[in-house]
Image 1 (cartoon, rainbow over the protein chains, first blue to last red):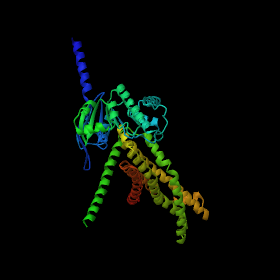
Image 2: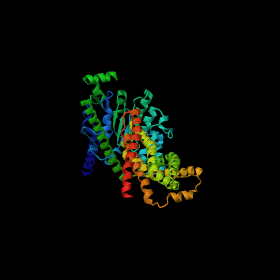
Image 3: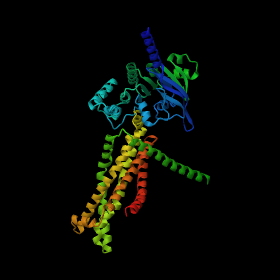
Image 4: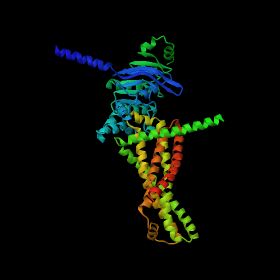
Length: 262
Length: 260
């Protein structure tokens, strides 16, 4: 009887843990001069969930990701990671939270003076000093193999294509085994085949690692493929949030227009 | 009249804002530099970048300065019948005056532009953001290492410029009027103490601080693509050179007061 009670309690704890938001954004506002970019956005993402943030160019999607990882500070509102508000945290304390996050930049932002392998090794060299050189090398090879770039270890970022750069950026974002993955336009500027490959890669990684992910994109097809839920932004506010079917059934003019023209 | 007043007000505002932001930047760099983890490998790379790679240029400029001072001093001293003062004149001119300031200006140009452009380029391509997103403090990794490298290498580069200047100065003199190097050195340094030569050499560590700090600040606050990178490189050189010259005025007075 007591054992059954323990099991029931553990299952309940486990359910609560998986439904507790890992990333919780509340009433986030951000302006640049007189231009308001985000106007009171609230979102939450749980473990294993992928949220796609959609919207027209310039609606503050990338700014939202930069606020979540603390590269910019909001005018008001809060960003909580594992329940900890990151506003006002010292850089080193914020660093501890960032170690749990992986960020793929829109242009990949690879270090142009380092090779592909050195780019992926960079976070490991700084945060996994317990690894020997050969262990680190193996880890880098493994990460690059996961993204299909194992044959290009010694190439410089300037010698590879945009799609390959995004793969390397993704491998670098995964280097510290993050629990939260932030992807800024992972398929922007890529041909349909490369986009499909990146989408498949993200899906595989999600299945294997069960991360909480936020994907910023204006590519509806990509969002449908990789995300469990979608949030559509317009003029700095969330117009609608839900599954793709919810968006399809919506009567909101902007939602209809966005779906029609995508 | 009102528009002139508004322009002056705006310029004053930008002036104080620049210094205020530089102060905040310096504080962040100081805090990052004093707390672990220390970026030893990057520091060594920067010591090589600032020191070894500036050495040929600094030595060459020092050599040219040595020849020029030698030619000028011999002519001037001859006019006043004080040719015997030539070695001391050359030694004091090179070590106390020309060596430090010339090294400061050369390094401002080479290293200031290099750091400013490199960091600005990293900034506009989001590489600095990527470093920060990887939970690495960019003030520690990028700024503190470069500034420390400038501080440590400036006195050594100054010594190299001084040595090069003295050697070519003596050589230029010997071509006209033979004088053994031993005699030249003995006569040049006669009656001198370390107090005469050490402060002017070590004051260049302050130049290093100025060059490194301004170049890193200008680089890391860049905005706006290729134009921003160009502006950061130009500002780094111009402002670092200007502040090195201004610092020299203050430091010369300071040395005269405290190391008479």
